[in-house]
Length: 184
Image 1 (cartoon, one colour):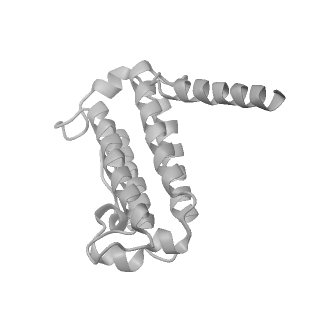
Image 2: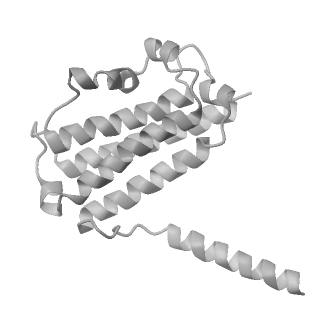
């Protein structure tokens, strides 16, 4: 009886925890719109991370075919895209010469297939963690008026730029999960 009660309590706790995690609410410390976006960014990142965190080197470097990208490279691509939009929305610019190391991961392709290999999945996830930490720090310094304002070039607002970062991560999450399922 005690085991059954313990199991029921555990199931109830897991159900409550899952139910609470299935709500998008503004994260404290941010303006309402930015806080809501932060909640979504963090949810996507945690789901991608859970999908790949246990990959071994073979899984991290697996190449589905000669035109595909490795999972490690795709994680670095997500970090590079987020870094680009940090610079674009907060500084009104793209990568400079000093930041050119991001270009390979941003564009991927044949050169990336050759170069972005041989590092553990934790290497790529740690880089993305650092980029995200900076994103969160910078977003805390802004308000919803800034979020609604036009970005530097004037063809999008800051909110749309960060929405694009999210949709980009969601698209690649599907790609990453599909590749991970094909790892021998």
